[in-house]
Amino acid sequence: MTTGVLGTNARQDPRQVLNTLKKIVNFNDPGVATGIPFDNYLPQNAFIENVLVEIVTVFNATTTNVLTVGTVGSTYNNIVATGDVNEAAAGVYQATRAFGRSLTASGDVLPYVQYTQTGTAATTGQAIIVLFYEGGWSS
Image (cartoon, rainbow, N blue to C red; front, side, top):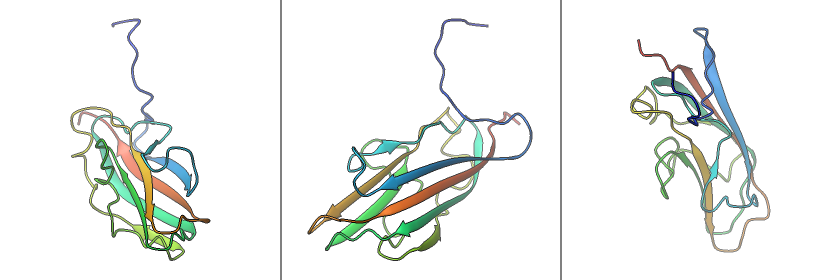
């Protein structure tokens, strides 16, 4: 066993149960326009079973409000993309594009949430994102 090597803080329960990652984001969180990381990684081989976004308080920029979630650089949108969520209507939305293990097949991945807007700046907006996944086991 190698020692002194930093790993990731992937969240992985050793039992065969669903795990979750949750992130709460507000319209005015520092760094939200460029992406805010979740607190934990999805472990390698995790099987994403569900992705839910709850718009708790509507985002109210006057022209566009775009909330995305993903793992790829400046376009964090491979988990929740533009059009998957109506940021101007409170409710719970499901995004299916990341289901399965394709995002985690090569290693642990850190999801980010990003909110961008145009027009008069938003004065409200809060969302809760929950990723449900199984294990991250080699079998």
